[in-house]
Amino acid sequence: MLTKCLLKFPNDNECAEQRRCRELAQASTFYLAVYSEIEEVGWENLTRFSGDLTSLSFWIFMHVTEICLDKTHPKCPPPISTNVPDLFNLKWSSNSRLKDVVQQFKKHLETLQAFWSTLDDIDRSLWVVDPKQASPDVSYRQIIIGNDCCIVLSINSIDPRTLPECRFIGSGPFVNLLRNRWRRNSKRWIQDKPFLECLLETQLPTPPDVEKNDHQVECGICYAQSLPIELELTTCDNTSCNKAFHSICLVDWLRSITTRRQLFDVLFGSCPYCSEPVVVKINSVKK
Image (cartoon, rainbow, N blue to C red; front, side):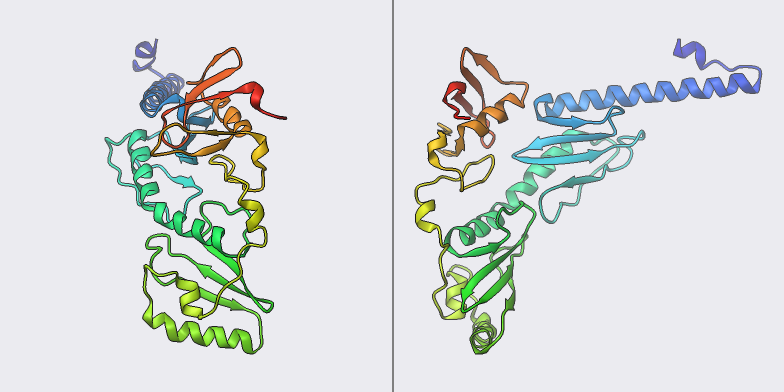
């Protein structure tokens, strides 16, 4: 049918119809190409898509990445948005495919592990008041340092071991003292030492609920430490991963992917972190 439509017609109306058929043929090529590329990435990683396939969202290592395509794909590099800092510069050519975007994004996530590890250390050991539940793209922490004073640290996501940007909040001699210590000691910055207490020459307050958190485990899906361990935990059996999840979170996660399997009251699937097999009982989840 498309071949017949692409034949030349003797009048203007027929030329318009010819153009319309050509556009339909090109659109069909676009749809077929995108479907093929989604299959390469894996349908289980696709979380959302628009009806015309110009907007696709993929779940990559616990991060949702939105990719926008136009009808000329893959001629132009697609815009990308995600919840990580300092999005990478996409390397693209006319032969590139969606799997190339995903592979480059995975490599970018690897470079950010030290950044997130640094922030995790701060969250565990110091009294962080903002943000309470940080998004992965947030690179600052507001920390209580005592005497009604706070310090705001901005961590470099590319090189988190470098001296962070620092801003003091508060007034009076105590803040001035700490500010002067920071300026003086920052010249002797040592990357491998606990930087805050060394630079400020004082012991900083720990989180007020540190004893409570000793009896809680952070969930690898919701990242919440405020949920009690009594909610039931499921741990990945892969010793190199060993990530813990609230069972209710893991059940929701497995139900969201197409590769899960269910046998009676047991769900089988892949660990969100290492992709090794993971199993959770549905009836162990307390509502």
